[in-house]
Length: 447
Ligand SMILES: [Zn+2]
Image 1 (cartoon, rainbow, N blue to C red):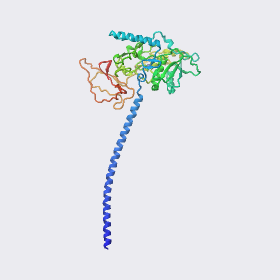
Image 2 (cartoon, rainbow, N blue to C red):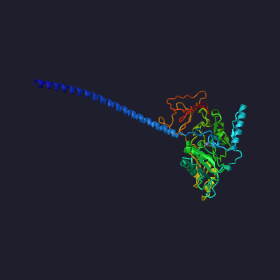
Image 3 (cartoon, rainbow, N blue to C red):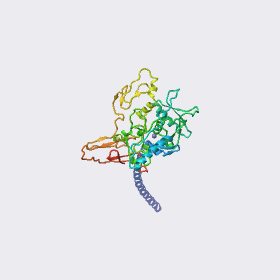
Image 4 (cartoon, rainbow, N blue to C red):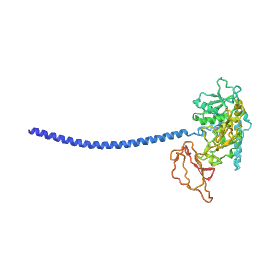
């Protein structure tokens, strides 16, 4: 009996201690559950932060993809064919001799403390007609023959850009397939940089390079523009009415890139949106603008490398007499297109942006359209934000705000409430985002 009681007592004790252990475990479990809940909360917070970061990274990558590296950053100053003029134009020995003459003259004037402000490199001795590609007598189309070197890796992209020019003009790009290279043609190589001669050189084959870093549609369209006969828009004969060159911001030795040319403009007006126009900071030594528009509000239009502008297409069509060539297959009388319009391949007028009507007779809007942002500010309390604020502004957006006080005795004041800018490049110049503030003169400012 004694033994039985003792055993019972021991069992009771064991049960008690088990119960206590159970209780303690229950509490521990509760604690653990609490901690799990807390950790799950943190986990979901971290996950949303990661996904936010991923969105930001994606946006950044998209922005970087959108960022057209300008030719002069991609291109070496020299190729094995010689120096590059304006970043991507190859000159013949004769053309370089002319450039050298102008350089000598500039140096001579500088040594006398004078500035050669009207620098000109005339296309002396080369008549424009010899620069045009010939019309194929069988097809009747002006034809640029070409050949791909085996080094070219993305023939498809180059062919795509040719198709865009062909769709908009009467010029055809024809690959030499009969093995007869004994005629003028562009010999497309994947060389060091993106460069071309201007027009047809009249030799059996002229090099045309689309380097590994040049596979962007806009760059290829630009180089094909040179090959067909286009100079840079900012070097046109009439450029000084539209742009100014800030030589004080130009990298020493690169002044040659801003020579004015003796160009035939076929009565097509200057175009800030031309794919042949360089951007604001081309060849800048300090990130400040080298090319500024005479009307500061036009500054954001220059340097696009996305599409052929109406006037890019128009000048090629006039250069190669496309309206006349197309007209030969039209029946009846052709429309008398006005306001820069001209007869296209379907025998009706091709009208510039901002016009309408069968002969482009209605002028509804400016050639450049209505800007999505920017403008003159003269009233108190105006608020300036980037488009889509507080979200990211769309790629390739440029805004110019001209803030003026109507009272000559007062200076305008601005208060910045929120400001963000993409980081600078290793060379200290702005990369994706750029803000230029001009306070002393309307043609030059600080970054
Ligand atoms: Zn160029």
